[in-house]
Structures are given as structure tokens and as C-alpha cells.
Amino acid sequence: MRNKELTYKQIIETAYVMFSEKGFDQTSLSSIASEIGISKPAIYYYFKSKDELIKSLFEIIAKEIQSITFMDLETITPANFKQNLYLLGENTIKHQEKDHHFNHLFNQYMLLSTRDKDYSERLVKIQQHFLNTFHDMLTHGVKIKAIKDENILIKSQLLALVFDNITNFILTDMTLDFIKIWREAVDSVLNGIVNDEQ
Image (cartoon, rainbow, N blue to C red; front, top):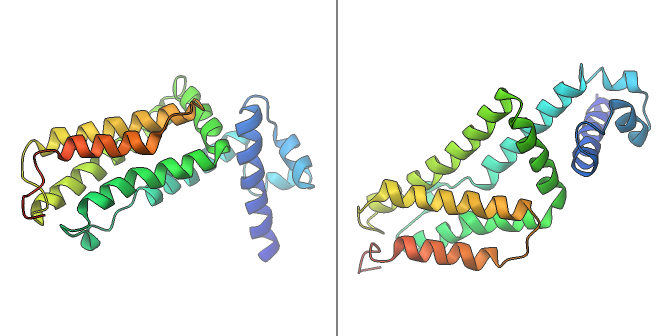
């Protein structure tokens, strides 16, 4: 059983790198198998087709994105509210800047979404997750009296849009101070609504 799990992990990790470097169209199951040192038929034990492998990899990436942007609202207090908003963006930025394979692979999925409705819908779900995360965070901030209840929906959407655009800019390999940009966005959104006692 352990060898099967190891082989599955090797297939996923190798596909992750090869798809990011060569693209989906230029990477065959044969080349992935060759890189790992297994036969092409052995891959079919784990994945019925290249499309299934591509879908499985997307699910792993989507779960990773949700994990990185997860916030345990119960741990957020008025004293650490702003810092947690900073961290929400900063953790994602640092992760994305560190893993260039992620950027190139995610670009492949964005391209795929232009011709495949299923991937288009999956990417919309990721964006909806960002919207929900920021709305939940700001709503919690109102509940714990860290911030005032002023235009919370619009402010959370603004944060989600800035966050999404920062992650998109990172995908292009542009070099900007994304953490400072994110902190400025958070400061601007919270300007005037942080409760005086904080």
C-alpha cells in the first residue's frame, strides 16, 4: 500500500512540475511516466486519462488555496483583527512568490477555462471563496466590535478584488512590492471604520 501511495504522490508532483513547465498540450502521460521511472500503463492504474490527472491536480490546488486563505474566526479579536487581515493576504503572496511552478500551472488552468466551461466554473468558485472569506472576516470584525458596520459588503468586495488582482499580477512574474500594496489596501479599507477604542 505504501508503494502505491508513493507512486501516486510522484505522479502528482511530477505532473505539477511538467505541466507548469511545458503546458498540458506538450506533456504526455508517457513523458510523466518516463520522468518517474514507471511504465505508461502503470499511470492508468491511478488515472484513466490525462484529463483525469489534470482535474485531480486542479482539485489539489483548489484545496491548497482554501487552506492558505483559511481564517479561524474564533481566534480573531479586536486587538489582532487588522494583523489577521494583513496575514490573510501576505501568506498567499509569500506562498505564490515562492512557488513559480504554481504560477505557471495556474496560468494553464486559466487558459483551459477559456475553452472548458467546467474549469471556468471552478475558477469562479475560487473567486467566490475569496469574496466569502473577506465578507466573513469583516462581518466578524463588526460582531466583535473591532470595526464599525459601514459598507461592509462593498469593503469586503474591494479587498477581494485587490487580493485577486495581486495574485493575478504575481502569475505574470512581475516584480512589485505586493505585501506593501496589500497592506495599503487593508489600511485604506479600514480607514475611518476602526473603532476608536482599538
